[in-house]
Image (tube, rainbow, N blue to C red):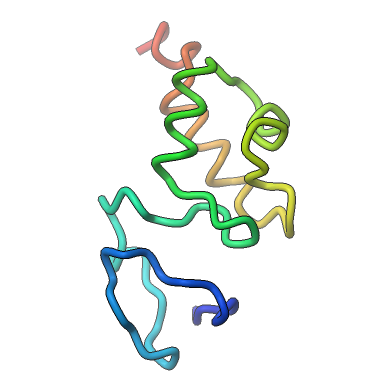
Length: 94
């Protein structure tokens, strides 16, 4: 898969990368600047912060708080995974 939004800045952990380079998940794993929602440039750190701080439980709640997921909706599966991992309901179970 290639970066489809070549006008958007890349996460700082990647530095300057030519646009013909493939965007692979391993290029940004563990980077706090990892972009989860490309449409609105919402980072992984922002998503985790809002889920844990506000005890969010749905993608709709994330959308209303920080806008992630309001664009093309491609990130919804990622947002659901973060909710499963970091929401207070998941913490109570695990």
